[in-house]
Image 1 (cartoon, one colour):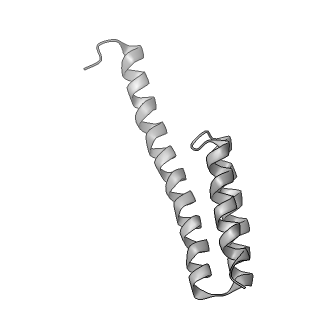
Image 2: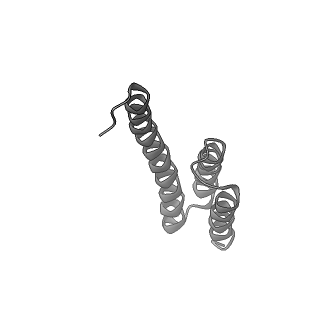
Length: 87
């Protein structure tokens, strides 16, 4: 256990930041799932609309340093590729 006040404060900050980051990454996953759900439903318009929302959320994750830029680009690319192949 931490003995110094500064170490105790650091632990409190870590706990707060961990909760915030988990929430953000959960939001990203939710938006990605929504896109995949629209792809399976077969609605191309609603899937592309969901993709724009997911893209925005993924890029927010990049700016908050939850995921790396290349990872985000790969996710967006995969999702847009699925929408393109819908027909």
